[in-house]
Image (tube, rainbow, N blue to C red):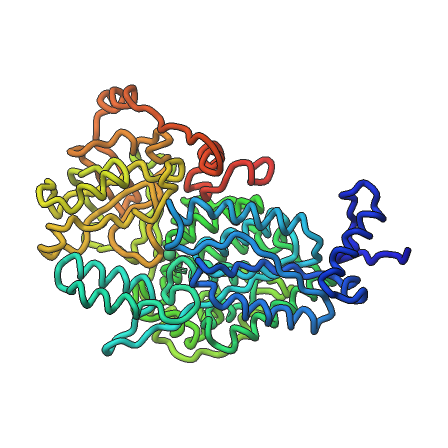
Length: 567
Ligand code: FES
Ligand code: MG
């Protein structure tokens, strides 16, 4: 018997009891794939392959994977790609969010179970990057992240289109009757025309930027377009980097720290980024034992300007952000607000990364500190009798005139109730009313979908109403906009005060005071509470596990048993 290498296939293994036999069997089976003995003795880089015919955002993964492999081979290791769950935002029922933790669990298990010395995780679409970083944090395998990159915008009749912000904009006009059925059909084929993730600052783009801020990839790799040759160069580099991680391991637990998480929050705020990213960052940080306090987020929001002017809140697309210097340009502007001694997966400090990056190209889409899009951050946290554990509002996407609202509410009891009544011409609703959706949180069969962007009731939309105060215990798409209170915790299905709200109650939103209150007498609430019944427990499978384990929004909607002990 030759001595086995201490890495790759040679890693300690005893799954057949006898160690030598376990190695012997593993090697002989691997050699059936046609590798030479010399190759099989090299260290192994695992590559999480998320190509899927269901996932348009990951269409480029096969080509990226080949480029990663090239980088791995050139650096002297053996690349082994393996499939994991892949989640594409519009393809999953009840919602992709319901399966983020499944992908995280799958990825963590495969990172831990298979012989590998470091990993490259290829992600992109909204839930995939959070799932992979949660997995990496829990497995604590040295890992580089490679995102598929944003799609390019499509030129169309003098404007540009790139996925869902424009998709929602046109759909709202179609609902209001000023875009015809024929035209909406034509636009359908123009909204997403290249591979890659949604080309606006939605959840996928926001998460890519946060992952770069946490140090999992080079800063410019967050925004290089999916179809650009640089994207392939970043893939090759991720492969080379992963091999470097074998000799100089930097583990996810070294990257995800209180300081780097705070940097990531600053980035989220200055991007005017997706509300979903807050839940995901909370979950990722939670896996590393780092807590995000909503009140801290709120304090950071008061002193972090929005500098990025991209849709859905602004004008540009991800390709503009990239051309304007991407994360390097942004972090350079935010420099004095950041912890500059955090490290990335190369071991470089944030200061070094910022200094090494390209110079500014233009200030149209990444503003200077003196001329911000907004002097304060994009998100605020709200607390009050309707949300004892918190709720959030994306003020950068909201209508300031609605920030201080006290009004009668119109309550929908779940997604079906919403769908069946919202467009009814007999619906008793005025533009001043607050629309509330309950029973759509993480504990419900709906799985906390992106339904928080309640449509404006059709009769009001036709009358020209563009925004109303809307509230729910679910989420909204990172590409949506409006005066929308989200993630109310505890959710209705957990028996939170939201469960007790009824049509006609008065509710008060105060962004100035950061309050969200239900103005109903305690005696009346007590009567309603006594009559409240929790929802049924799903009978089996993943739904049952989620129901039994899922945490609320302020804990990142992770599953309790996947969090580190003591957290
Ligand atoms: Fe995949 Fe938008 S649908 S990123
Ligand atoms: Mg999205």
